[in-house]
Every structure is written in structure tokens, then in C-alpha cells.
Length: 276
Image (tube, rainbow, N blue to C red; front, side, top):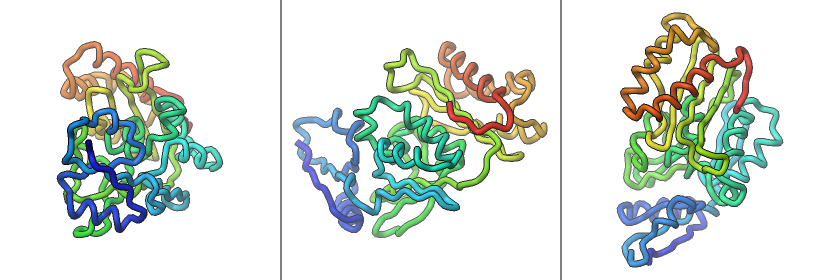
């Protein structure tokens, strides 16, 4: 069975990662890791960072900083007390992830690192992450440059640890998130779409159970080139959306769902910050 370690400080966690980067699996809530552990695995070291205080920060100033070990429940409790539209949009997404029991264990960092629903809206909000290692120190990486494939990230060091997620606390004209699930009981959406618009800066992100979240760069460029705002005439974007989506997946049913979500997102109500 995997060996279990629970460091009390960030320094202890970074040291363990530095000494055993290939054998160490980082966990906080454990909701996506523990179910897949093999009983005969004697090599893996489970590094539980869930109680490290430095990873529990929640700050809302010029930047919104969310520690990687903050549980979804802790984030929801904090965000509900803030009169902040960006936190409000994130709250709406987080409050519909899984069920209350899972939200009490699952962490924001775990959801983002594995390409969950928060990763999709955070991509649209152009979020950054703070990572740290003993050798590389602390640095920031754009979330869009981090996510590659499910379970694969572009961290520069094998002993990098996700410290926090950072969102610029700016005024948005429009924030929209929408998803499609097979039933209200389903925990993983078949597809999700997020749009964030501020003046001429419009960002569109797509996530699904088959794809890691990513930005739709062609759609974003077309919106800027044609000086379009959100909402916009779907006829000016529909074909381009189809081309970019079909380049990602060739499943016709899946593509139809994505198409509908994007149409709703890009034709939504103007000058309104909402999370749906």
C-alpha cells in the first residue's frame, strides 16, 4: 500500500517533493486520487498537503488569491460573504460541482490541476497560478500555458507544487458559464463553456469530459478583428466556431452540445456579469 505523509509546513512538503519527485503523488482532498490507488503499490508516497496553512490563503484585493488546498466548501463560505462579481461568478460554478460531501473534501487546486469546471472559467478570466519548488523558487504561470492534457501539466520542475490560483480583480462587462450534464446527478459535465468580456478583451474557454479545458483563440481573434461585442450575431461566428470545435473532437453529438453552449454564451445578455 502507498506510504502516507502529512507535512505541517510548506517547507516540509517542498523537501519531500524535491527528494522523491517521481514517487510522490500530491493530494489534498484526495477525491480523485484515493479511489485509484492500488493495494499492492508500495512505491508511491502520498503527500497530503491539505492542512498546510500557507496553502489555505483566501485574499480579495487588487488580485483574488485562492490557496491550492482551500476546499470548495471553504471557498464557497468565503465567496458568499464578498460583494465581488468575479468571486460571485466563481461561486456559481463551484456551488454546482459534485455534491456537498465532495465539496467538503475536494480542493480548488485539485479541481484546477485536473482540468475541472473551475479551470474552464478561470481560463476565461485569464488566471495565473503560483508554483514553487526548492530549486526553482516561487513563480507565476498563466493557466492557459499550464494545461496540456488530462493529468499532464507544463510545470517546469518535477518537484513543483501548486501554491495558489490568482485572478486579476478587474471589472468585467460580462461573465458567463454554462454546462451540459446528462442528469442533475451527474458530477462531470459533458461540456462546459465560459466567456469573460472586458471592453475589447473577450476570452472564450471550452471544457468537457473528453477534452482538457482550452481557450478558443480563433473565436477570440474574430471577435476582436470585427470589433464585435458580446452578445454578437451568431451568423458572424457560427462557421468559425464549428471549424475550431471540430478540430478538437469529431464526435457529432458532443460537437452539437458544444455548439449550443457557445451560441448561448456568445448571444447572452449584454453588460451583465452572471454565472449560470
